[in-house]
Length: 197
Image (cartoon, rainbow, N blue to C red):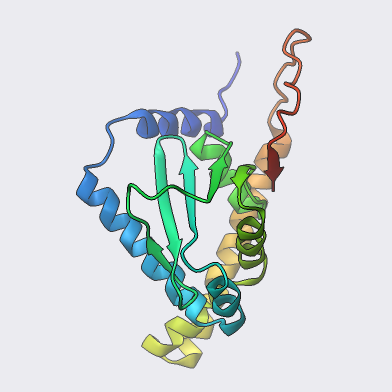
């Protein structure tokens, strides 16, 4: 009797949720606004990041995953703002992994998602630099709320939990049977789009 992997079950649940009804426009806008506030909070802690981004002032990057998208415009201060809906993007970044479970597993492994990039090369390079070099110091933000010692203890527990989860996911993926390959389904030729990790 064949057993079903819990990951394949979770994958089907995630697929049904992602394919379900779209959130109301006001909710999507509010989530995007909160994401921009968080990005700016992280960027403001890194002077080199805001200086680098300020050179791209006025440029717009559109991020896309499945039916969800967000357009970010660079401000003169080197931060982000939501771009007007009619603004034509200078750069398009589209995550090519469509499965929410695959994206979550990649994130837990510490991998970057595969992305199709079209448009301004310099803006893409600056955003890649930000992704590689800017990190949120959650422990520092937590210390402002609860103090240094409790923040250090909580951050250590969180790091150990994430590492345990990564090991668990890695072990389960290693045990999962490989999908059968079909000779007729050869990989498509490169269309000239650059895929970044």
